[in-house]
Length: 132
Image (tube, rainbow, N blue to C red; front, side, top):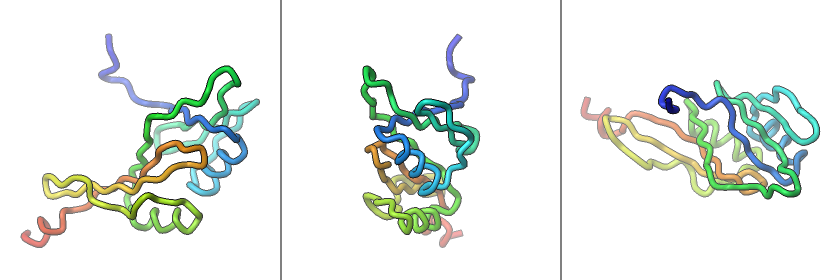
């Protein structure tokens, strides 16, 4: 047995300041808050994946390392909206890969606790569509 047919159902995002974390994911990113579980856990719905934003216990330091990529249909529109809410992106949406007539674009940012996040989108490769 292995994880070949498993799906990701929940991802933990460690934060240092619970209220600030909830505000960022709910009010800035616009993720629907499902519920809050005492003492410091908030659950958000993101498509089919649940995000647990929570504070680690004092004996368990926050562990950062995995980036979360949010696939969106209108990358530029979501980028503009989040930027207007104060999200500081490293760079505007940019192409990171082209193949099969499609471009993969990313726009990286961090939450207030330094967790790595990114917007990700695809669009037809401009030169490929011009030759069609």
